[in-house]
Amino acid sequence: MTAKGLYQKNGNRYLIQNPPSMPLTQKEMDGIYGLDFERTQHPYYQKQGAVKALETIRFSIQSHRGCYGECNFCAIAMHEGRTVQWRSPESILAEAQKLARYPDFKGYIQDIGGPTANMYGFECEKKLKEGACQDKRCLYPQVCPYLKVNHHKQLEMLKKVRSVAGVKKVFASSGIRYDLLLSDRQYGEQYLKELVQHYISGQMKVAPEHTETAVLNRMGKPGISLLLRFKELFDRMNKKFGKEQFLTYYLIAAHPGCTRSDMQKLKRFTRDNLRINPEQVQIFLPAPSTYSSLMYCTGIDPFSKKPVFVEKDPQNKDQQKNIAVAKQPPSPVPSRRPRPRRTP
Image 1 (cartoon, rainbow, N blue to C red):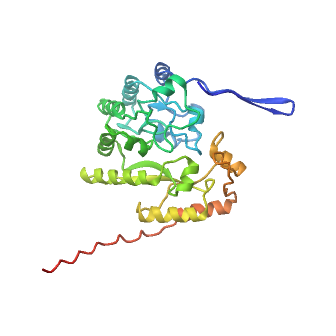
Image 2: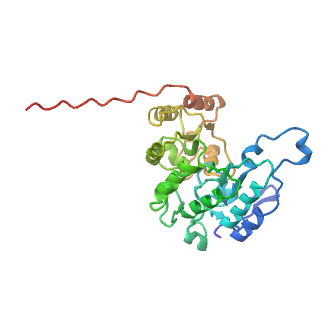
Image 3: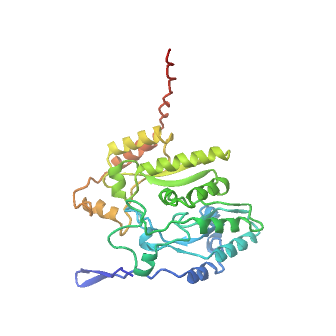
């Protein structure tokens, strides 16, 4: 609603970027995902053997599109939109029933989600009427009060899918935004409780991306204190229900503004506070139309207009990643000494 087209002259020609399409209505989304997709590779490629990537998506269900996050390094908001659109529970249920009729369906729906699992069923009323804000974001630096986070609709939808005949297990594998969960005071803990009991396949994906405040600010990500709050809640619920499940952390090395020193601090934090040796670490890759790509190309922070360090040497980028993934035992947890008793 607020987006405008862009153009740039190049010689005697013009490059034109049209504004994005309007978000799909729920009826339109239901219509698209109700089409009779084959859910297999094209016959032309079958002689080349099985496509491994299909295993994780063939029996998965897309419940929504779009993302509130608008992280500086991520292009999802560019090609799916900042307005989240979701399918009706009836449409999702119909797809689950269709999956259950496939001869080679084993009873496991690998994922019900979208760019982030827990963005189903709620949106900012102001955004729906007037379009996305041009001067602020939905989730950064904190969750906007106009975004009424509510996990109830997703909880009800997941329960219905879980009850479909032939479905043994439903997983929410897309990863979650823990800041959204913590901001939902009414259903947030109940949502996590249901995930822990029914919808985790052993590991839950979260994406703090870094641990250092200066780097997180340039990424457009929340502070690390929210991650620690969430981890404490997650661990407590797993203990309560007798589950041995873990968090998987996505992290980025060599993002604009990130130095070797920042990665060393990240390593110490993940080792001593999260008690892990990170494995899911990727080297920053510029994506089209993102603020992080702008920083990477110009060396300027577009918000402060100040220079920002950008690591462009491939070997130094690898070194940043290697710092994070190096195998190191966690520091021992300090034992509490008993207080000496007072003598009368």
